[in-house]
Image 1 (cartoon, rainbow, N blue to C red):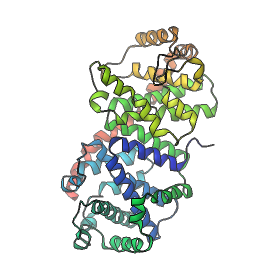
Image 2: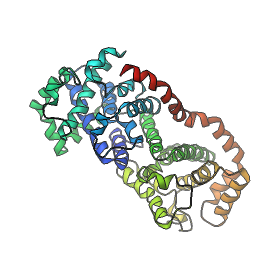
Image 3: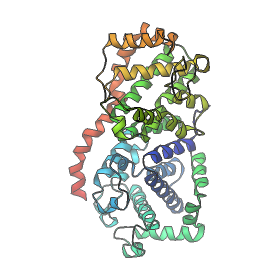
Image 4: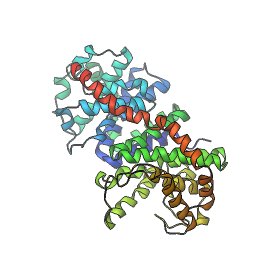
Length: 417
């Protein structure tokens, strides 16, 4: 049985992005819906291809979450849109299942009359037409463009074909009213049910969310992916079931999603946090719970939200004790600590082997974390670290590649636009 349904993957992405900027997340949702209706009306996009392009529309501004988002989203249109479009393209290409379609994101702010300069297949140019129109349509509905913008800019900044297609749909189906009333969500859910994501695609979209935390904290991304590796290794060594191992992977992958809501100055602070700041930092667990609740299986949810609980009741957020926690939860709690100690954080350099083993053993002896899990870790410590180091480039390599590739394509993009 699948840990998560396709429609719930979409909801988790939406709630995570809303934690950064609700207005921008709503914009992505509206553009994704309008793009869906346009592609559906066109009739040449069917099956998983259709749902992939709709997800692309939803995530078209993913690169903007990395920037300081203007209070007025229209500033995106009047300022240089290149950086967020380029970063969004690279992000979707390398860190999501949408790599084959990602180039469309690169050009979604390009004027329609410049499409002739693009080396895109015909179908992708058509999607770009519809996406560019859907983007402008949502701005228009929010009063961020002049009332006559569409008619004045027909076949200039927006596609006349997309405009006519939208008018037909609106006259027949009243999709703007559906957007305002919220009834469009039922249509979106039906889309994900009709064309479900594969298990690999679901896994990659959820991995993508872990990388979205980079928009708040680079060290948190590396910590998350390292913790996933350690947790899976410990689960395998302790011979948990296949289902429990899958729960461990997803629970660890998603355990720090709530950090997307924590201000960067707290996440990346190199000093000791004040009492109030620590309270804010600890709220990330409840933020994770709010994102995942009702969208993922209970075992995965509880693994994610219990990684800071201690077996003696001194942990947070609920002060649980040993008998209230499962083995997978205890494994992830230990993996989380190991990742924090082994890796570089904003407030510390990596610790050496002796110090790491000493701290973890002391935590176990004081009754805070599982002695059984710690015993397994210490017996196989060198093996676990060696395997992680061997796989490290695969874990975070693509993420680091984005940073260098971004600089390389800036010049090429400037020549086109």
